Amino acid sequence: MDIAAYIQFIIALLFVIGLILLLAYGAKRLGLAARVTINSPKAQERRLNIVEVLTVDSKRRLMLIRRDNVEHLIMLGVEKDLVIEQNIPCESGLDSSAKAIKETIKKSSTKIRQTS
Image (cartoon, rainbow, N blue to C red; front, side, top):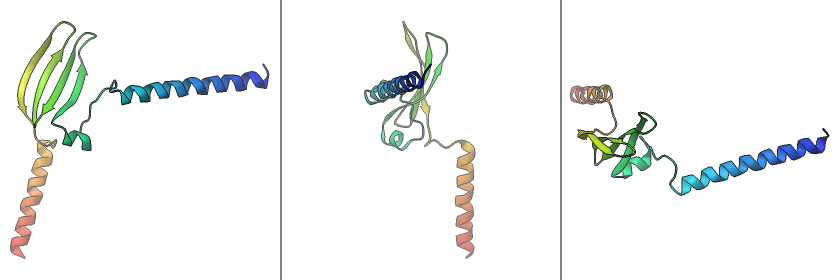
């Protein structure tokens, strides 16, 4: 093979990669990509958000959906959708240990201010 064949191969490869990236960008702009936005600034502004998606098998998925600081667990299937658990209270994204640490810092800073 001569150098022209290699150059033609590299150009073709770059063209195909460019088409794939263009198709991915178009799918994202049209909303065809998965929209799981946990702890992003946009997620804080929206009332409705998909928190997590878990594939159970080839036909069913579990979705955890947050609406106004209340979460709902839903099983999506081909033939039937099922609400597994609803009205799960949701905090602002902090787990219990982070909340405890935050409260401890708040109490200790209040005590320091009182003694000063």
